[in-house]
Length: 105
Image (cartoon, rainbow, N blue to C red; front, side, top):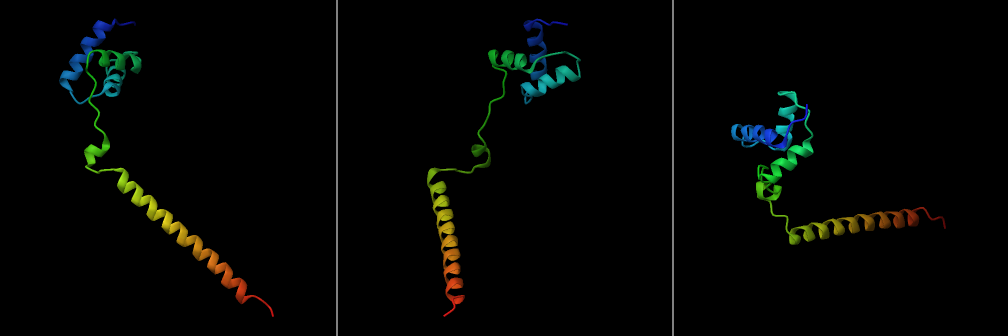
């Protein structure tokens, strides 16, 4: 059963009107499962993109309000480097003291 783009677009528009927060994946799933249509998700995506029916994506940082700036990242990196250096220094000093204590004179 091959359906024309115009007919499919009418069904997509009706679904988007009833469910404005559905994206192309949900619409494709509905057409496949509920209507029994054999539709490729890439075709649904193309039709929705050409007709400006896709959802607008919002970056996660805007949703959570978190600011992932370069400055905070560099401070975190410097902190981890300092912790790593102190750990390595501790291991070296431990080995040196063990060697001194285990010497036989």
